[in-house]
Length: 208
Length: 194
Image 1 (cartoon, each protein chain N blue to C red):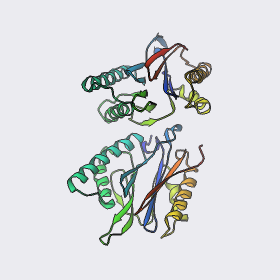
Image 2: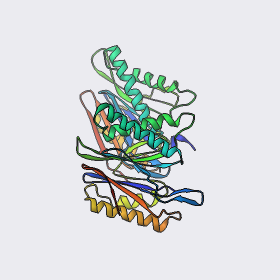
Image 3: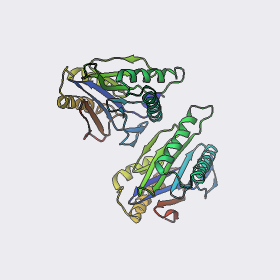
């Protein structure tokens, strides 16, 4: 009866050397029956802030629309783009507003934080359904395959991976974890975010 | 129980739904139309809790038409899907949710592309090449995985639909007898006799 397992799906984010990566599977199911294989769960909020929303699909769409609205209001009022850490707080407060009737989503946030010196620092974080923020230093996982993602990431991750190596690491972590989970998979995609560009790659995986 | 299918093809969307209205063991009506025409290029097949279905479908139909009256042009399929989804998502956390699942098929006359959306009573929305609701989906979706071709002609699409209907008739205990089939393409909506 868990709402978190109804539609399925998983998201992972990892920190690299002056880059971050965030990846998700593409499955949307209704219980054990698969419905769609192009259901993306990662949304670009700004050029340098990305959010992954695994959980109940209706809330994935609703929260995406909510965050887009609140982020646009922030940008209009502040006359500047939001930073990842502030966005994490925005996510947290949006979720806590529904403390006694929550959105069934565990967001994962990834981005590049602008430094006073002009450079960028990688940032990841995740929250629970009511907005408690976990400021990770290495990786953040969420979704139906979270336990498997924890295991894979703990084994494969190392600090200071270059963007190409980070891509390989996060891809292997995600692919092997979702292959052990019935409710995740049916395709995957990976975003690698560096200060100059963002590369979105669609992975070829098992479609069972 | 309610069976509905839909599939896209080259420049069209076919939407089919059974025409049986039943309560418990009694088949009350066998010519019920469960596909609403929301606008000249938009179809919606609905299924779910009796009563909720027609109330919700008519509410959607009237609001989509209101938009067209106010703005002189109809809502495009992605926008209509978004509005319908929002209505369902707001409903699900209300005092009495609409327990209605829908398949929304439309033709976008500005980009000349067919669109098909699967939505359920929770407000889940997915853009799909083909879809189904109800017990019939257990038989139809695997057939569609195998035989669906997004570039198929209308005749080929109808042949695939016929396969799905035949399989449901053969294998589902409470298989419906008749189906209503509607097609939407650049020329609008029309009904098809299978």
